[in-house]
Image (cartoon, rainbow, N blue to C red; front, side, top):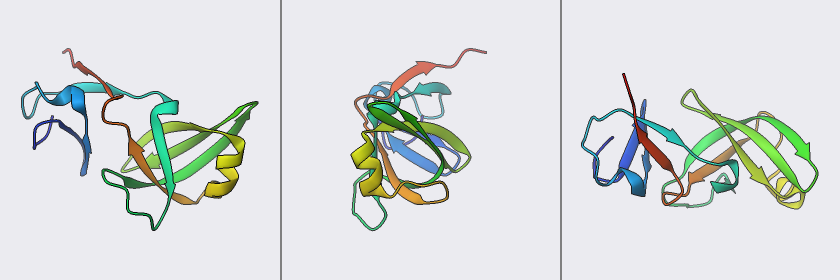
Length: 112
């Protein structure tokens, strides 16, 4: 848990997370987000709470495409419609802006 209240940190990446608001600074947590709750934007856009991530892979799954991403050593996935994939030009090696929906991050206290 990071400051200000309602933020989490992974290395030097600080992300807003509504579920973190009642937790104490420094508390260790496990964080989950569903691929459909990851927003992707082209580089150059101004999107509050976003950070750059590199596309590591693309998998076509019928009505959606699952995009593998990596930022600051953090690996995660995002789901987009095939037409959105083309709009983003999301090919392996491309950098996109990513935003985790703060209200959709699931946070659990870490156990020893």
